[in-house]
Image (cartoon, rainbow, N blue to C red; front, side, top):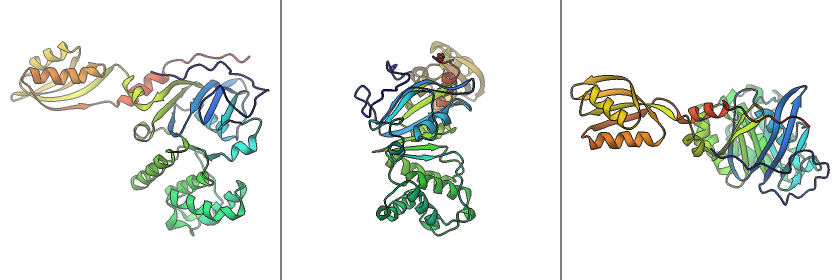
Length: 339
C-alpha cells in the first residue's frame, strides 16, 4: 500500500499566497480539517492531484461528499488549504470556482426548462462570456450525449438523461477540475459505456475526481484511488496497487483432471493453501480452495501442471478489489486533534 507523503505545511494558512512552489499537482489539498459541531468530517486531509481519473471511495459518512464540496468551493472548512493550478481557494474563491465543474449526487433542475435553455442559463451563471456561451453549451451537449434531447423539457426526461444533463452543466466552460458525485447512478449499460469513454477522454488533460460505490467501475475507470475512512485517507495510490494489497486469503474454484480429492488437497497444501470443499468426477476434481497471497494462484497452477494435471479453470470467488477496500477501511486512521 502506498500513501501520499505527509505534508509539513498543514494547518491554518492566513498568509497563503497565490503560488504553491512547495507543492506539486494541479490540485493541492493540505491539512484540510472540517467539523460539523463536535463531529469531525475531515481530519487533516492531504493530497496532490494531476491530470487523470481519480476515484474517491469510502463507506457512507466517511467524508467523501464533504471533501468534494470543499474542493468545488461550495463548502467552507476549518483549517487547511486548497489550491488549483497555483490559485489559493481562500484568497481567490470566485476565480477558483471558474476552474471547477461540480455535479452533486442529487442534481435539481427547473423541470419546465428545456435542455439547451437550461444549459445556457447555467453558462451565464458561471460567468461564461456571452459570445462563448453557445459554443460552450454545444460542447457540453455533445460530450454528455444530449444531442437527441436538446429541445426536450427536462422534467420529461428519464432519470438517465437527467443524470446526463447534470454532467453537462458540470462540463460547461471546460473546467480544469471536474468533480462528480456518483455520476453514473441511474444510467443504463449503453449510456454507462458512453459516459465512461467521455470521462476517460476528458481526463487525458484535466483532473477528474468521481465518487462511486461501484468497485468494479472504479477498477475499469480510475487510474488512481483515494480511499477515505473516518475523515482520513487510508489509501492513496494506483488502482492496481490497492488490488495487490488486498486481503491475503482469497478463494478460488479449481476444475482440473488428473486425480481425486486427496491428490488435489496434497498439492494445495504444498503451496500453502487449504481445500474448503471438493467433489470428485471420474479422473477429475472440482474444489473450492483458499490460498494465501497473489502469487499462490500462479504457484498452484504451476504445481498442478507439473504433477500432470490438466487444469480446466481457476476462477476467483471473491473480488480482490472489494477485499482490499474492506481491509483498507477497517484500518483505523490516525486521529488529528483540533488545535
